[in-house]
Image 1 (cartoon, rainbow, N blue to C red):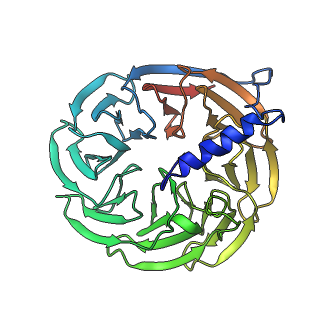
Image 2: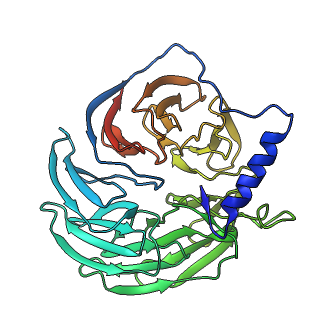
Length: 376
């Protein structure tokens, strides 16, 4: 995670002090041995180029997988075979990954560029500018492209021509975490987490605030300790929306009214997912939890991936998938958290949570290896 306002320098100082002490250094957990009950099978693999330090999510449509690298190259692959269908150059450094909808592909850049391309041909349909770097993939719903920028603004753009429909902005603290937290859209509402632990529900078509609530309050004596930003996208179903703060806590709210339903003292900079009766989360230390989504009570936890940069989980029918900083994919049992399978990709970090498809998932490594995988 990167920070604004020289916080990276502060972290280097803290690290240096820690290294000079006589205390044993905390290291990433070593991978434990287990008897696999399942296995990962690679259907196809392609290379799209490096992501650098950006988190560049691929996107899946009914027939395609689309992915970009930080140099601005966007590619489309056949969903079934992995055959490359087209390759284009956006002309800007891509920092926000790829979004898609209504036959269009959307990418965002580090200088505020947003562009739309025809999914079938790759021809550019429009381009526009927003206020600062786009750190998450643009999201599409009901003719609106929602773009979040690094300065905390949320833009609603017309998918036909890129014209601005609305702008939502709020004040941000002097010191904030630089994150790739995107937005979540459901039933005409845009749910988005902000700095200082605020969660907002915004109207998709007008940008008007529906409700706002606090996930976490800043605590501590220093500005560094008081960072409580929401650095991952909220998750939502028909009745509730949940969000978690970095150095904060996890809270679930009524999706329509914004009233708090339950809270847990779990902090995460990676994120969470919801599936059936469960809520799954990877906390800031890399521990993976299975929680009851209606109460927040624990079903299980697996701390055997501690400090391995564990991604947010992807919930499939029979397994929970997480990835780590050495490019490993791990399959966990949904019901009790024990390991089912493990697979090493190209060895580079996987920062983006794997993306589900109808009978498996795709995952993109930092070095640009794009895998289509099924687990048996």
